[in-house]
Length: 143
Image (cartoon, rainbow, N blue to C red):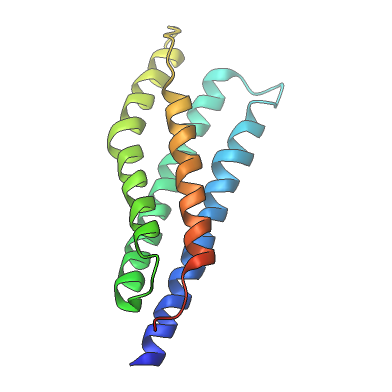
């Protein structure tokens, strides 16, 4: 039983760090970089962003399901950190992304409504990244 818990904890740590790397790569590297491409129009960049974040969220939900199972099975300390990261993902997915999708559609249609939603998403993404890195570093074998 102890070896199973150790395996579950190691899996949870690995998934936290993998998920953190995904968030870092998509949200903080690839997404800002596409807006620096001079030949990429804003509507095209926004469309690419919608597809990117849609796929990213599917992958994140898959990771979060396996992570939740591993964390529960591990009985490790610091279990709250991955749970909070999953909660942040839920808020992003249910509240922020649909609103951003509407705003993106409006911009692509020629309107330019002002919004701070991207800043909200970035803030949540930063919180999620910190939670995942902390969990990846703090999750230890159960005692």
